[in-house]
Image (cartoon, rainbow, N blue to C red; front, side, top):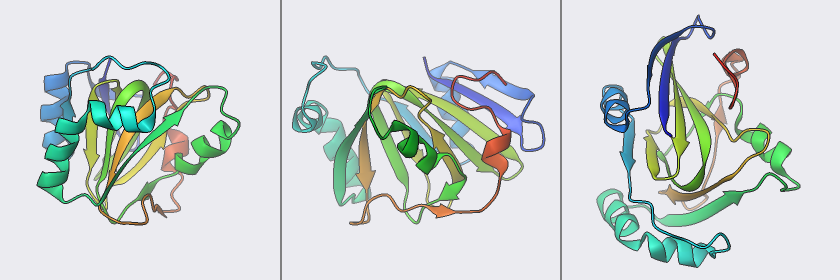
Length: 182
């Protein structure tokens, strides 16, 4: 189930707001410029290829591409037994931003996006059917957890795909990791 928790940037041990209602999550995130929507979950075989996943969500993908001019769309998957899981997790755990919107749709599994906006930290647990749009320049980090399990469709406006600009801040180390209580 999707969840939004909000913290003061100074109080990583104290949740000031929490909701698992998708409409409340979308409305709350919209006030700070973050997009959140849910697409219908469609049945897919666990061994579905990337092409099959993209074909399954073709209408939604085409709509987003037409509305936003994305130049590339791909699928990323991570399993608990993946040999590079620790390195991949570490790659995204520090606060960074991008020069393009980070747009992800979770086909299955889950991941934790944490956004640092002004003096607040917004923690969004994205699960299957969630699409999140983090605008360019938004400071954030992503945690796939120690036993990652997710498949996500990624949208890019830049041909070189994911490029992170790290802030050098240690804020991400002070907040709960995926699966940890606040």
